[in-house]
Length: 241
Image 1 (cartoon, rainbow, N blue to C red):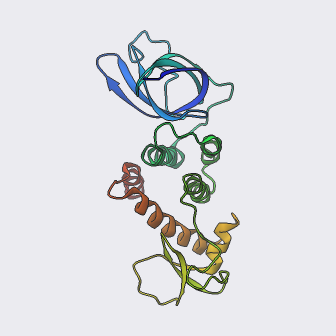
Image 2 (spheres, one colour; image 1 turned 180 degrees about the vertical axis):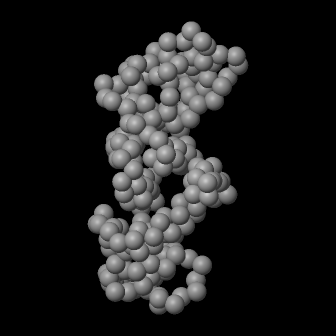
Image 3 (cartoon, rainbow, N blue to C red; image 1 turned 180 degrees about the horizontal axis):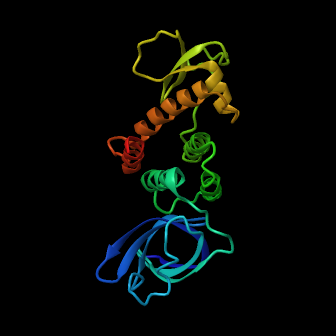
């Protein structure tokens, strides 16, 4: 069984849960070692010096050691960067992103580019401006990094380029297929203009954003299978309140 020794590794906590009286199990996403679990002994105790640091969305540096699937946290420090200020919709968005990563990332798979994207998106959502655009672009990059990149430019049946004035039904494992604007298909119906705008990171109109939101909800649900995102319920409750 391999011994894991990591020193001052850039990381974020995606999730944590209590363990016994004063310890906790941390799910961390690191730049060079991917996602894995850490045992943090005594860090929930009233005299713990790390209790305030071991929080989601806080950029930290972790050192750990141990054998097996759950090494022990040896030390933690704040990274040399101001943490994002998250509240309201920005906080709910960050919770959603964490939950998505918890489900979709395989343990110990290294995703350096995705780690950089995650770090950046936390600071983008804190402004609460264009959050829908920020989330859609992050979802797109996440799927690309995991090998599930979307076809947004080519008609999957004809092989022809997407036409801005056309309408398309999107099949997750196939791609967009030309259809008509009155299609009654349960699959997402999108304008070619929306697909091309999303491909080039140029979503602008409310219609384009709404269409791409439906598309990404459909695609992500496909990859989640039967698993439900609790953060979506938090969003719905916030809207109803």
